[in-house]
Image 1 (cartoon, each protein chain N blue to C red):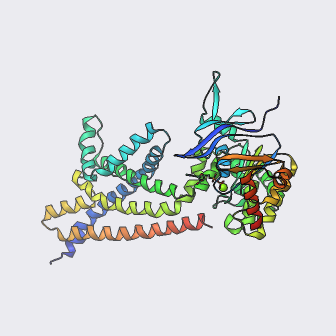
Image 2 (cartoon, protein in one colour):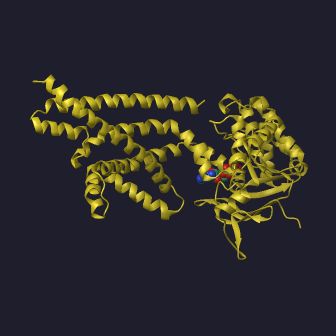
Length: 221
Length: 258
Ligand SMILES: Nc1ncnc2c1ncn2[C@@H]1O[C@H](COP(=O)(O)OP(=O)(O)O)[C@@H](O)[C@H]1O
Ligand SMILES: [Mg+2]
């Protein structure tokens, strides 16, 4: 294998550097979307009225049953048809965020259901509102199981971002493909993309562990 | 005009095909202390749970202080109660659970403050002052900043009682409040309940296996069996001169067991 260090430092790294920023940005915003969207979907799915819960359940099932790449293409080509033109990056973030909302909804549901029944009943006996029940009692107690599970989705989303290269978003995979095509050299760019993903995944796992421990310490006395 | 504080009118509660309360008629006057005794599975807990609206019912109506709980009056017709209606009536009822159900991530004081601050809209200072007073009544003022896991079972149950009192209920429901406790802690909790009963400030429904205690504090004792209230009466009559065959059997078994 021949590896060109000059090419690596002068051509590959500077362009990859910028692309790494796009990848991280896409990951963080998609993740935040999934966190909020997942909570909303879960609350709709467990709503008392079947007029709310049934459609929510169907939507979640539909999203989970379709490949993410198909959904990215779907939004990319469909949104302009109905008059919404967004930059490819925004469309991609939306698609990844929505897809993971459906997955995170299940994490929330499992976490909330793991809170003992007696806690819900105490909230009723104390005549607490639904909002206060979740805000003060259920969510704090379900964080210890929820946080690590959501952390896994952060890493999963990060690893899904290369799919955005299919709609020409200048994230790290797209840039390494472009470099390869321009110079007929794939080795350096693709290897660096791989190392980038490896290192970032390890860093993310480390950060998640810290948050996890913090939550455990501050909630379980 | 006088009406009962609690009234069950032909209340039917079923889990699938299993009828747990069968057209139950039952009422409790204001300030009355009523104990419910009976064998396991006879529906005692269910009486409290449907009244606390932890469970829905399949038939009949419950009234609290003269107002329907699971129904409401719309243009002279009784229709299923709205959430807002249930919350309004429910504010008069407090319940103490067998397993305390304290919020484990909150201190004793925070447990007591939660409902007054966020449900009744009291200021934190106001709520804290009252919660501290209530914790003092149950002998736990010095444990206000402890978390439930740092308290003994008896202490946890006393915090749970203080938390319930903090919402100013008129009705207190106790579901075997000492069953989950080590024997040496039973006394301290019964002492608190006895004081509440003797204060005359509350209408109380107490499910218990402590026959001696029931006899001491109750104005009336009800014996449940198989979803029916089989016999009721003043403690001395019911314990001293039981009529029903099942009640006699039950009492002799309980007394044998000590
Ligand atoms: N959630 C439930 N689902 C099905 N059956 C139940 C449920 N809760 C209680 N039961 C049944 O209802 C009956 C009465 O229960 P309960 O009121 O708890 O009795 P007690 O408190 O007198 O021991 C029992 O046969 C019990 O098995
Ligand atoms: Mg019971």
